[in-house]
Image 1 (cartoon, rainbow, N blue to C red):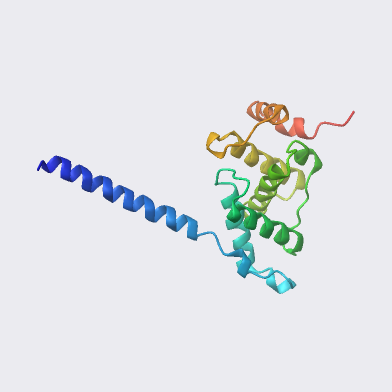
Image 2 (cartoon, rainbow, N blue to C red):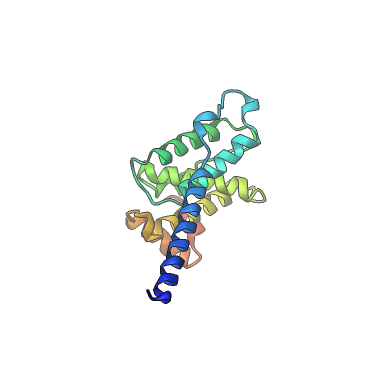
Length: 175
């Protein structure tokens, strides 16, 4: 038998084994949020915060699938955590949220808000937090692997972001 073909097959099998391990490790990094109770002020601790960030990262890294149970549970946990955490204040900015239309996109925006609040605590201004969250959602929506339909409003925001005019577009005075 040809040693070249044997080595090629062995290398391919090794790569597939490593890839499988990495995928399983990533899937396991999502916490079982059903085991985290959020009933008292003390429940909103470092573990709950970490689970919120992991849930947000999961939502913003996985392709959109409407009936994905992990996605739905992650989103439910985020909403409960956002409404109860005493450590962070979340403002669903009407200017940034208005373009999202569908409730599914609103969930992605909420996940992005969580990421900004936890990962970029230096951003204090709620308008700046909303702007950064909007940018994250736009990047998510533009990635073809995420299978998100982009309507005219979102296209306009993507164009404005590309020109460095997203803030002016989102927060222009109402007429």
